[in-house]
Length: 75
Image 1 (cartoon, rainbow, N blue to C red):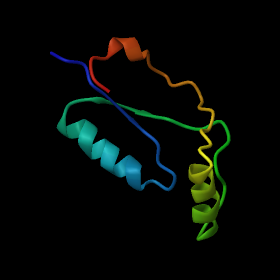
Image 2 (cartoon, rainbow, N blue to C red):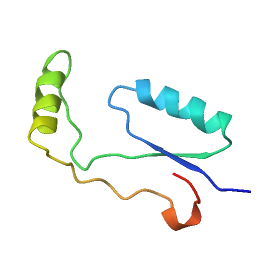
Image 3 (cartoon, rainbow, N blue to C red):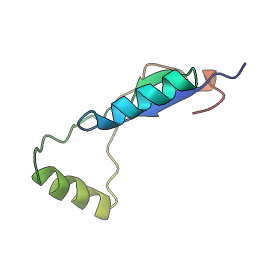
């Protein structure tokens, strides 16, 4: 039996809900990925700040996750 891990990041919770559904349907472990410095913007400004980071190719530093990726066959 294959061990599957669903990694997800969810700014406002929508992606978390989808990740939970996927993990449940494929019998996978669920693990959240979090940036060291979370974007604090609300409303429309989150699109300005988040979009500008995407455009300039900024990749946030991530907090360590609580699982060993080598323990999983599929992610």
